[in-house]
Image (cartoon, rainbow over all chains, first blue to last red; front, side, top):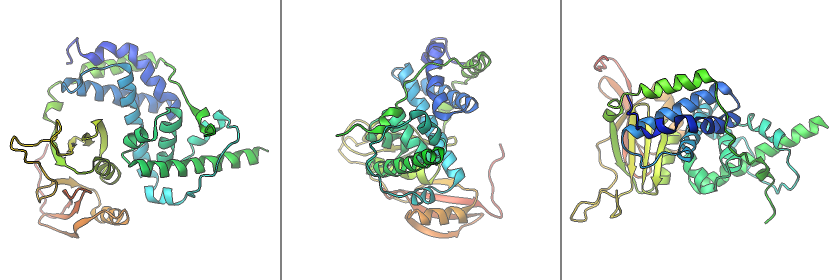
Length: 168
Length: 170
């Protein structure tokens, strides 16, 4: 059993709402958010017990949660279809997109995209991470991530414009 | 440079309290973690020349998950209970240089073995992804196996059990 002084246990109650609050709106399902929250804290306490952590704080735990979310989407992508097929199906062109964006509508569309595209857009825009950091999370090169982001933006835009067209 | 319309998607973290039942159940699970359990995690280390390419290779093609990447010369990956450490050799801390300056190099013939559920389907998928094989013709005794390489030239053996396969029962 972890020692009472375990750093993860020490901040558990304070950090839990932040970790869950990070995951819930990004994965869109309370059940999934709970699963990933559990994975996050269990990974953290395991790392802590190995003595491989110099400091545990809420920001670090949110970073672990981000890893778990990306892992989930990676598994999902593999289940849904092959990555190559998903990427090949989307145009590479990313036209300038100057119009005002309805964020609520865009959030809804994110859930429709292939998991890898959803992961890339979430990390880049919802989390506001630099492309190099997104690449690190996705286990891709920076160039490959830029390409993925361009394709993901194009897919988001296509769904967005189709939605507005149908709505009109 | 004009503002990116997708910047409107920025989503700050707003703390949300989970269900009380979940909060208490997870606390009990954390408290029950056996500290000795993970200290025996089977671990292998591969030396790689390009950490970006290696992490992408193992995550994209072999079902590994990135656990930690604290600096540009080291990453920790997991595949189930197997832990894979990727290190870039060099004179930097963690570069595993010997006292006489000798550096480790990727490659060789000793390798990690990964069991797959359907070897033929896996081979086809990896061929499509242009993964480099040393030997992509399944063969072996009590297993069917092939040998591929990561981007730094480290061998990885993929296998599926065949007639006569043995493993200690758990």
